[in-house]
Each structure stands twice: as C-alpha cells, then as structure tokens.
Amino acid sequence: MSLTDKADTDVAKAPNCLSIWKQGRQGAGLWRSLGRVESGDAADLSSNDYLGLARNPALLRRLESVSKELPMGSGGSRLLGGNHLEHLKLEQMFCRWKAAPAALCFPSGFQANLSVFQTVAKIFTKSACSEKTGPLVFSDARNHASMIDGMRLARLEVEVYAHLDMDDLERKLQKAKLDHPNRSLVIATETVFSMTGLMVPASIGDIAKKHNAVLVADEAHSIGVLGENAEGMFLHADNLILVHPCGKALASAGAVVTASKAFIEALLQEGRGFVYSTGLSPWLARGIQVAAEWIREHKGFRLGFLQELKSVFGIDHPILPVAMGSNHRAQVAVEYLSKQGWDAYSIRYPTVPKGKELLRLSLNPFIDLKKLQKNLAETNSFLKNQGL
Image (tube, rainbow, N blue to C red; front, side, top):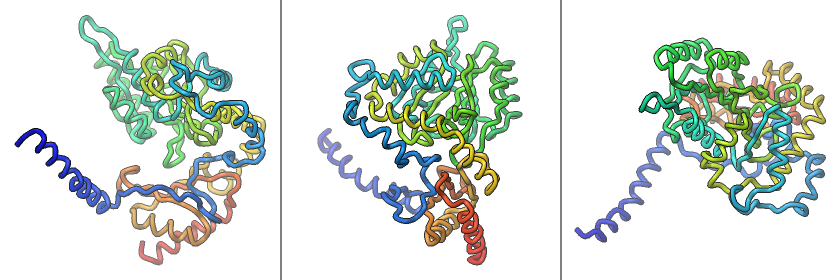
C-alpha cells in the first residue's frame, strides 16, 4: 500500500471513529449541548451574573460612550501592537483593590490559570547539585478544570488533598518537607468552589505561610461578591498568586492576575496564554473597571443581598447547590422547575463525580427567593411521589 492509499484509508475511517465516539458519549448520558439563547419569561438560575450587572441599565449607561472612545479589539498580542491604555488602567485598579504590587490582565480566566502554572513550573524549579527539582503542588480535589489542565500541561508533580480538608493538606505538607526538603511547595485552590458555593477556610493562608508555601488561589466566584469592599477572600501577601476571572459578578470576561512584581514579570515572559494571545478587548477592560466601581459604590445593595441569602437559604454565597444523586432525577427536577417559571440546569458527571449530580442554582438580587424556596420544596415532594 502506498502512502497515498494509506492516507485515504485513514481519512475514510475518521467518520466511523467519530460516530462510535459520539454514540458512546450519548449512550453514557454525557452529551453536551449549548445552553438556550433566551430563557423567555423564565427566571434565570444558571447565570454567574451574581449581582445582575450584565443588563443593569445604570451600568450600561456609563458604558454608552465606549464604542466611540475605544477600539473594539486590541489588534494583537500585548507584546506587539495590542497593548492598550485600558489594560494598564485595569491592572492599576486591581493593584489598588487587592493591595497588590503588580497585576497582568488576560483574555480569559482559563488562559490565566494555564499561564500561572506554566510560570510556577519554570521559576520555582530549584537546582540541587546537577539535578533540577521542580515544585510540588498540593491541589484541592475539586479544583476547576482550568487549574487542573494548567498543572498537567506544565508537567507539575501534583498531590491531591481531600476537598477543603485543611488537616489533610497540613499532613501532606509536613510529609513533603521531610521527604523533599529542597523542593518548593505550592498550594492550589479556588476560594469559592463553583459547583457548591463552599468557601475555602481562611486558615489556608496561615497554613501556606507556616510551611513556606506559595498559595495560588482562583477568586472567580468571590471577586465582586465577598469581602468588605467586594475584593474577594484575599488581599495580597508576598506568597500569594491570585487569579481573578471577570465573567461572574463583574459581568464581563477576561481575567486579572495579581502577585509580587517579580512573579508578574515572570508571568509576562513565560505565560504562553499571555504571550501568544490577542490582548483583552479594550471595551471589556473598560467595562470591568466600571462594574467594579459600581459594586464599590453600591455596597449596601450587595451586602443586603447577601443577608437575604443567609436569611432565606442559610448560605453565604449566591451559589445554591441542590443535591440530586443521579442524572435522571436531576433532569426531572429541571423539567418540573421549568413549568414553575425557572430556567435551571443540572450538573452531571463528569463535571461532578457520579452520585454527586446536582442542580446548581445561581441566585441574584432580582430573583424572588421566597418563591424559589417554595417551588424547590414542591419539586422535592414531586420527585418523592415519582419514586425518585
């Protein structure tokens, strides 16, 4: 068989391979589809727009002039012609907000996390005699896919600790210090976990300092929501690298990393997601600044909403998880809630472990929490009556 004939045979096999793959994924109930374009009159329970700013008329009025003042796209990598004054203003704002010495903005949170762990792998590698020893990373068992992929792509050695278990983390850190005294230690965690709304204990900062470890924390679901001034869970410290995706409460896209000046300089050199990506849209860079300003100006609005969440559902964050236990039960619940006027989605394996399927309800100040509470109780009764 000639090389040409072999290539033709491989191409002919490809559609069949795709078909088998698709059938297998669909058969396992794992086939993904795009979300609805519009939810109609149904109240949205799936958006991460925790403060309802994405369509806030007052906020949008502040942004009416953006298209006249700024280019829509940056035009290239920020190391070439894509660096814009709005990028610098955004980074400076985050430095003030997080009390950080330096910041760098990215076109997405996923790229930010990939780049952070690439940089960690490069700069925390120590030379012990002629042998290079890379950092050892301790990762929470439920960390976001972007953090996990960042560690994998950077070929970091990772030890997974039990979800939110600070005792397990400390045991692993202590053992590592004895077994690998020359290695840099890194802790990786989300500050608010995206599926459950559970928060990392603040003591993780003290644990990191105690063991001389670097702490990489993703503040995607805490920035703009938590903290005295909506700054999230952490302000800057010398051993902190903080990633702030801006597509949740800040109602935009992109991300900003804050850290020491030395780390940000290294991130600009080594972070391939920064070096080889078109810079963040100047429109979005301005929009993030305006959203952050609005949130800080309306502190009572944010805190009042958090108090209402605590009063009605006993939660400290707008993410309300409702355990289902199976894909089928979750889907039936979604259909029942839809008839009650709610636009909800189920979270299924492999996003969550098997048996941990749930409804992830994302709340905001414009949702009738008491009505939702009543309808959730009715949904639970309906599921029981159906033997589910």
